[in-house]
Image 1: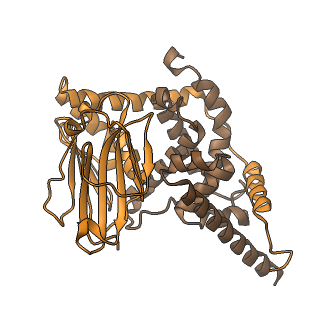
Image 2: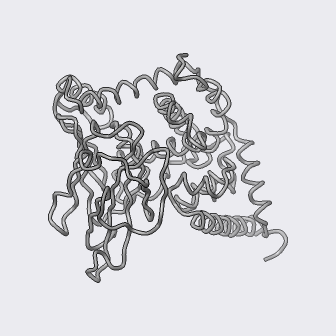
Length: 224
Length: 164
């Protein structure tokens, strides 16, 4: 290493910041344009909640299907809406519940799942290599989630009833790659789900076990 | 603006530019970054009661923007590897996005790049960055150290190449 190619952390940090400040950025959009987009999000979220309550099930189902049409292509109104990535499939059912199917052997991008869940009215915190939980765990977890319904070794399928989520809570998903999954001696994946208080939770890098307020699914194998 | 959206206008005015810069630096595409950042602010407006209480609202915006970009990209490309936020670098000319250091930043693994964006561009401390990413503080330090080493190495190689 010589003086010319050596950069200290401080110098490099300053260089990164300087580059950022030197960027030529377009003008800020008008606040009205942002709030108009925001109202669309709000309506979509409210439509999802209404669908979950069943008060206007058919109308909300249609609204949800229409809201996602731009992303997913044309879909019949009143049918379930589905988001498919290689790592998971998220289906919004006509009765207001959501079905999440995780695909085996595909590396999951937590931000993508979190955004898609939130987009469909399910406040969520998705992490890999760690799991976030609240102590005490908010009540109602068993009403919010069901599953996994699939047999061992198959892709886990969870049902989420967002209407049953108490205000101020989020669903926490933690994904782990384990050398010894479920005591089988084989490598695999663990998925843990819990209901958390959005304003009070801690995250740990230790995979949790099944227990009160925590649901765990084990899948042999791992991402390819 | 209604009472429950109080403070959003000030936040938007003060934070648009730094958030857009961070997203653009991370994606390398100013036009896409503008769309993603606007989308993130719209989501923040819709959830302002929650975002306004977030310990680092600008970090919330930047992560939401990058995640929106990831979803956008993944849905269209149907790629099997879902680990990066990379998008086509087709809009960097004349914006300052094509500097060697920012190009090197975009070649970092997604998690290392996120750490640099939060720690360096948004000036978050280690603990807030860890909470924001859902990882341990020690993991943040490790990602940052690896990222800085990789950037130094890339830039040293670039400098050597230019000298030749």
